[in-house]
Length: 327
Image (cartoon, rainbow, N blue to C red; front, side, top):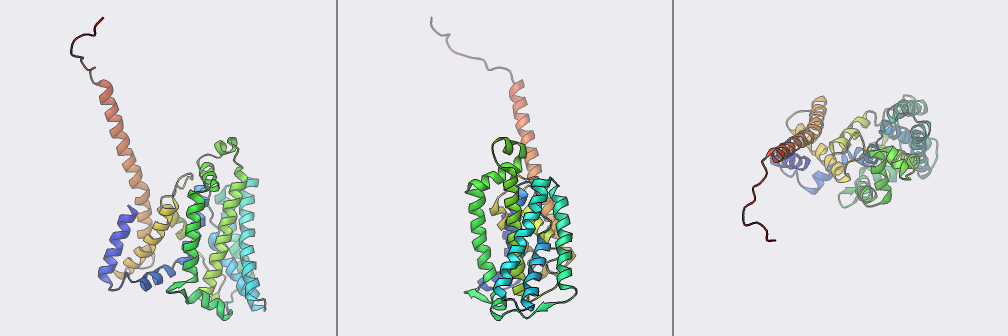
């Protein structure tokens, strides 16, 4: 269904806008939401594991603020980037500890993180906007690196390939599915559930911090509100890609396809003068349909299967014809 909708959106946009399918235009389109696209890869692991991380946008903002504040105080930008990535790891460790060890529901723990990490970002930067990064840092976020591709897009492609391999071709990926299906079954099977949860939350924090650094480089300036509200878009894209909100099922290919669909859909809606909240409404409607339609199809198939079974059970036994067996 997602692929069909994507093809319709691309064809419509191509008709409305000459040159829509050119490589440069597609790169520009992807660049507009590349930081969210990067975080969705890690969020998929968290949700398949049966958890949720509402703090990713706040971790993005806090990491961007760490880069800006340290850089403004004369710290080399390379050290500031490392500090920002470590900030994301610490946030992930804290989320993982609250969920896997303390036993708090992920919704509560990461909601607290959403508020706390954002508050810390405002404490560090107050109401100021900090920019003036090193030239190479700004160029890395704003200019092409390989052909028309920016550094952010190249990293997304690399991370997407790595996420597909890790989720679908590794033992860790299988453990994530098992834990998401049933924590008790996973525990009785010898899977270290707490360790898997720690790993997915640390992954989420690290990737969110990386996205925050890239976002700071693309914007060229940072505020305390950087990335605010991104968590809802990120979770929506993951669920739209077919990942079950209850955990245990989903595909990284679906998440990647959903990312491309949302970017192209927003562009197509802009072409027909639908912007802002109306676009969010269309994406929300698409999310509802993506959940409802598979369930409706499954219900119809189940009813047909039951009807066939009942008809087979009530049918009279077949009459055997022919000569009786000898002897």
